[in-house]
Image 1 (cartoon, rainbow, N blue to C red):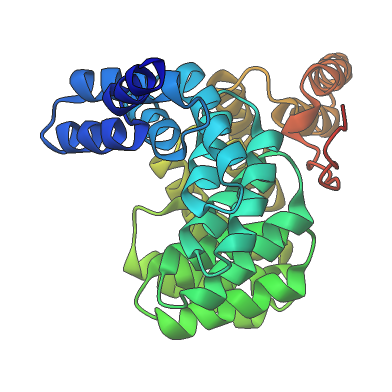
Image 2: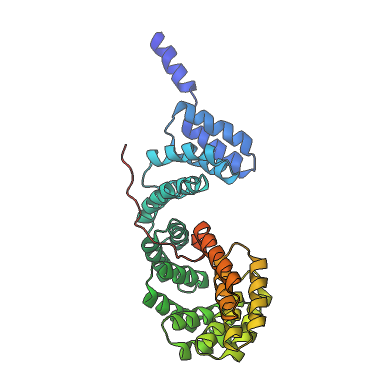
Amino acid sequence: MILLASLFLLAQAPDPDALSERATGLARQNRPQEAEKLWLAALKIAPGHFAASLNLGFLYHSRGDYAEAEPMLARAVRSQPNDFNARYLYGAALQALGRSDDALRQWRQAISIRPDHAKLLQIMAVEYGKGRYFRESAAAAARALELQPDDSSLYLVAIKAHQDAADHPAALRIAEAMVKRFPSMARAQFEYGYELHRAARPDEALPHLKKAMELDPSYEEPFFFYGEIMVKEGRWEEAIPALRRTIAIRRDYIAAWVMLARALIGHGRLELAKTELLKAIEADPKHPQPHLLLSQLYFRLGEETLAAKEKDLSLKLRRENPEALESRQGRPFPAAVKP
């Protein structure tokens, strides 16, 4: 009798698979609150239930509740470590919580399961770059580009990643491939022109920078680097309008203000150069570079007291804001800390 009663109770016990399936049906009917209750009920019966954990994690993540999503997705990963979606979403929740390195570790596992997932590789390349893991960023970007060579955004990610990794020959090759595939894109023309300029090939760079300027007159970068080449070549009159155009497009472009002042100094228009540097300082009082050039200009004008004041101020600002002048250094991706 007792045995029959026990079998009856077991037969009436809720089935976590059935609860999860019903919850999925409710979610598809846009009834997330009812679905959530059923998934929680399934997990109460079977705490490691994969579908309930994954779907609840996705539900919480989709509404921005990342702190709630994280433990659910962690359960899903523990339940099925080789599931791509679980790893992908778990990494996304960790990234949203500011745990970038942990997110990348999950995504590394995910990409080992789906090595052809170009979108995830692109996300990883960007996230590696934020962490200054430049070699890893370049490798991920190159793999994504190989998978989807018709996606112009992947060229830009790959070029930036290789620039950060100080692999300029690779950045040049990618920029060349981009301009061949997208010749009517201003950004493609600029990127190739910029890399040629960086490779000390200004005669080859200039036509691409000019083409970029023609294709998109509102894009400031080609005008700036065209002006920079003109300054380096001592062609002051050609540099000045390009640099003024840069500043007209983007008034916070302090490097353009400084380069314009250099062009004006080279052209012998010292007072006008001083005026432009004072405008640059007004635009960004904390940037050290305008103060440094202004110091040199004051010295040249015989105003030694003002020159010394501006030099001291530029040094002070550089100490307070070193990233304004110094490039970020790369570092290797850290191994996971074992408990």
